[in-house]
Length: 227
Image 1 (tube, one colour):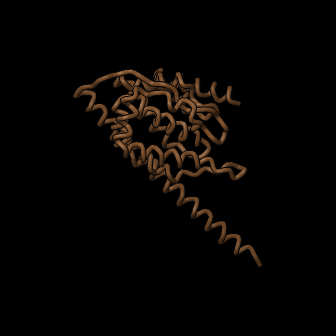
Image 2 (cartoon, one colour):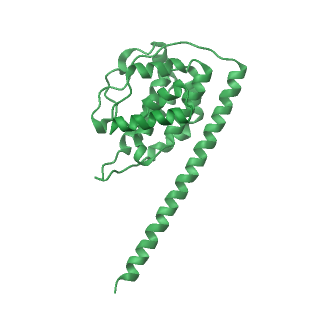
Image 3 (tube, one colour):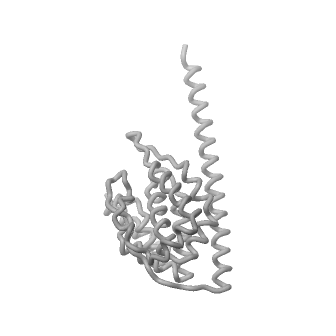
């Protein structure tokens, strides 16, 4: 099944014209139970020091974070990647994440129950809280980043705990810079991200209302059908 999903993802990568770094992010945040490899995480982290790649990485993460339902792994693994990039990626990752903090905070309410009633949203909710706290502690971020992404995270076991995976992080690295044009592009990306998140929030609200209306209609129908 995972091989089939991988083939479908490869076809989508080709037909939609995704760049190499976007393909890396899609693979690292896929629905496969296996966690992203440490080398892939490090590669993505290095890519964020190139401004064009940074924009593409964050746009793909933003898209994954706004997924839901059966694609809960997209959301969870995107949070894992984002948490890694806060320490191993460029400074712009922190700026982007803070500007989009409301998107991360909304995931504190994420819920997905499978056919057996198992709640896969628990990991998403917890990691959302962890990242929110991480972003509010500038001293901690500076300390971790100044340590040149030491290996303290390599075996912490915060992969997809529902599937009993191994550790989540590897090492990062790289350096970079930017300019006035880069700042303009970043602002545009932040604005687009906000618009995407707001549209998704409206969609979720409308979906919840529809589900509620349907439930009420079924209850009324059930009562009326009883003698």
